[in-house]
Image 1 (cartoon, rainbow, N blue to C red):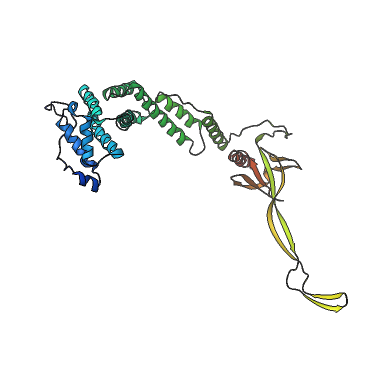
Image 2 (cartoon, rainbow, N blue to C red; image 1 turned 30 degrees about the vertical axis):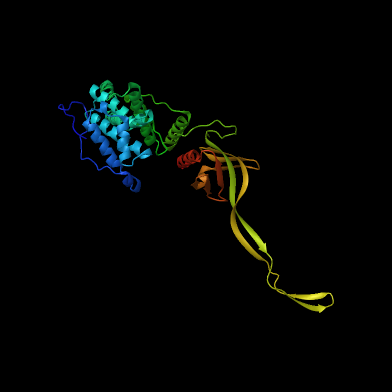
Length: 370
């Protein structure tokens, strides 16, 4: 690419280079195509100018001369166009003369609407996108910033609606990144939420949360409050003691480790000796082997209530309550929890619901009961 010179009779981004050797018929048949040579031939033709005199047939002949056709030919044409646009964008301005040149160049290269759109998105849109990134890099967008971007869009002949979409998408992406960072730890503090709304205002964009995102924010806010000792209080349909409050509820399968013994009768070789008619003596052992093992079995199903005093199980077969003071500790799992009791069997509780919320409440409740 050459610098644009006032001495040139026509605005052009091209300068002439060494002429590539054109191939004869057999060379084109026997050897691979040379797209780089074809591109150089086209550039030289355009550098000779004026572009208005360059025909689509001449460009096609340059491609054929180097055995370039099909998809590769379209790539060469797109590369030539891209070189011209890149050169004109170097000063962030496309003048009227440059715009006229590009219009003629498009005609000569035979660019389709789809190819032109792809090139614009790769070059012009990308250039404007970089400018947008620079402007909102400090997480702020004021009137002066908007005017700067509007001026650039006009200078590079980017339609205003396209510029607005690029700017909007960039602000939405910046806000989305900030939101993801805020809840990476599955917690959302009031300060973090306030910062997100402040960022939205600074970027002049509304923080819009769809149903899924709102639910995620609510859950992360709840977990933050629980971690900080603010437990939810639920109204439940069971009798509670004076001063007792329910903080969590979950459908639960109550399971316990039980010892199981299997009896295995003698099954080895046996010898039989006849004593008299109808009576035989059997040689061998009739001892029974027993294999004992621990296994987890289901005891009951029901609903589990966690209060500030007890863990209450309302099951289909029985009702059970365990005072928090009787729990030594608990072992959390992805799908439930094991309550380590000071005496008796330790229940393995399979929880149906938001296990992390339940376990977070349990941890705070146990710490508060000590």
